Image (cartoon, rainbow, N blue to C red; front, side):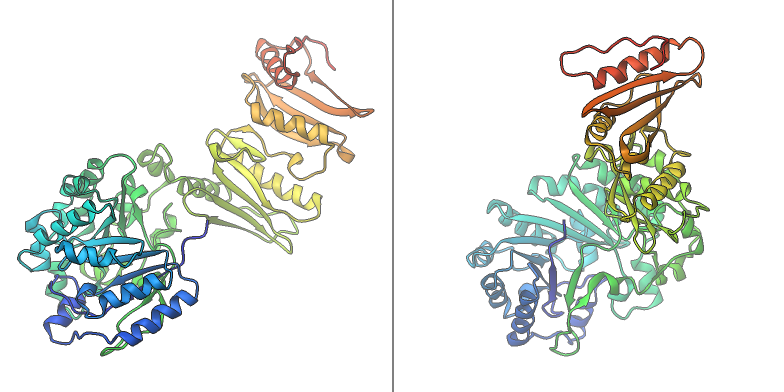
Length: 526
């Protein structure tokens, strides 16, 4: 599904806190933060809604300090935004009456609280404002009492990272539904000296222990995520790490009392990041956008070691990050691969967390997808993923050649429960195709490994090849005569082994009509 189109708008820099990492507190302290006039804000949010954005985030500075804040909220509700996110440090929502004023507008709200430490000491050491922790906790209690959705955000800095393992204890009783931690971005910190950056930015490897304890403290399924931490430092935490996010357009303060045109938030957020050359060998290379250049200048990049497929398997044995495992497998399988003509090259793409696309490019491309086996039968399957077709050339022979080439490469690295075969591309009589699909759904068949499917001319017959652990080959054929389905099997020379007989019984049993037992195979060949 497409993510909800969303826009965020910065309602000025004015803020009551002086967070060590934030440009808004610095601008306020320097006397440069001012209230914004209402008219330009309304103009921007009307344009955003007209452009199709369904979700809006109001942030600052501290957005609730803007004199026009409630007017902006009312207009957002009137425009029909499906969700309105209020990103606040709790300075005004600590008053229950202010929360009620917001809710009285009738909007669908999410309150996103900027907690800068899981303890009072860590939070106020970071915000540099006495009493700020009590206010934000009180705000969360007001929101919880009214049954509203609340989430939490923290920027990870030296002064607060050691406290994060207390977050489960703090947030679960308050009804929070999400916690997002993000690495401090130097370009968002204002004008800072090298000494200030050194006091602000922790070494990433120091974060692993507190983050691990924090994640373990939350119940399974709680939405906790960590932004922009390099995956290689903590592959065990990789299901919780992300770089970038859903496409978001941002409208920010652009000069004194003016707002910028909307810009792509995550595209801009990547502009001060880079990667060591060694990152190309990491299984996370496709989803990691690197390290902040200021961080590399401070600490170097020796701590960033590529994650191998083997290390990933140890870190995530349950394959929660299916796409990372599948892409690594396909990348190994396709090393040095030259696709059959007329295809020119193979491209691999992660489609979110649950699918990987394999595309053979040509005038008409062949597109296969790998998904967790539980989410689709497909044209073939291993014990952990299924293969499906989402696009193919009109020429059946061309499509078949590409499909078989992909299957041959994959079979070097995985064992198929039911294989990629010619039936995926070549026409078959309906009765033949239906029986093959039935067998695919019911595979495996004892000790027999299903190796291939061959389609004979005109699709009137298909031959399915199986192999026993001893190396014995077995063929099951399916056809149609005078409109009636027919079939049989053949085995190699000599008396078939018990494994072959047992496997054939399973195949025939899968094909037998309901209530009919399988015919016992013998040494005879059909």
